[in-house]
Image (cartoon, rainbow, N blue to C red):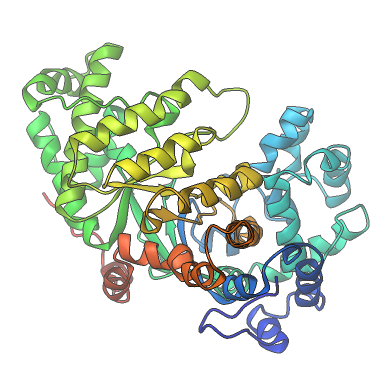
Length: 487
């Protein structure tokens, strides 16, 4: 699939892309096209593939750090190194571990302390085992699209090192995301702050971290950020009100990944039951695990109601766990039933159920078909399991309303693999639609017409992106001290 232009719906010329990408590598575009001809277009309906090529994606989930932390890299941040091995620091690192790579070697691979030769020696024995996983595809496609390198090996890794360094400079987020990956806008769940006042607000639209706000351990930090004193639950409600009043107009959603640490069985605990627990916490006392759950449940629903009042969708992590050797499958299996109770309790709230609940994606199709306030998001899914994601999309489109699915979120901390993930997703979307046409479930014109809806139309509508973009063009933190403090 050739590299598209996404300032409009027409294809970009080779010269335009080379210029926009800063002339990173002479072979970058032609390498991407060779990969497209060889891999990405094979087996696709030509009309569907053409529409998918030239339609921008809305990226509904990332964890990207600010561009300045990449262009002015310093040790100790979330990005652990400033060289080509940054492409191996997120997600594929887990595949490397479970393939057998020693953890010490994995840590050294993305450290700032080793040279390219030594890093490749650590990676080389394990690369063949992971290069064809979804995580591996994202890296391979990114390496070819960005650096013009078709086969990563002991010789080309040195070339990759040089081309990486010429790429990372001010403006490279927009070049990689918009010009090369064809991403119209991203939605970032910052892992650094509950809301990141980003320097690129219309490109890196932000979620509010509901997890930070409903986690009892975070009460002090959240209050200090608002410059508010807290002695009881009523005071902390005021802190949460401040967060939503200050950042809610500029956020596209709120998001919690609480499912990493608990079931999603959030009970609607009234304030009078949670208040004594919160007071004891503020006074330095101990609270039991059942009490902690009760307080967290109360704060979760308080945040959901604030989000609903501001017409902000609520994103819920479900399904597969990042990392390795630590996923309790019984808890993951409970996500679908827990989600249905959340949907029942809040009929006026739009819930975005993330990662297709993998591997329990058929249950998520059933949920979308049954519940009016459920939207299923394919973020991350394309690189967890590309083949199952094709089947998910085909099943969804023949089962549930097509306006209730979102089809791409890269879900990365470093930006480079997002490019590769977007290419995996484009092929997957085109494969799914091609299969539905081939098998007689829809006509070719119907499939072509669905592309816009799937790739950006649903996201634009669900998150009110046009309204948000107008506000974010003049984001106040770009012009003044932000936020205004409340004493």
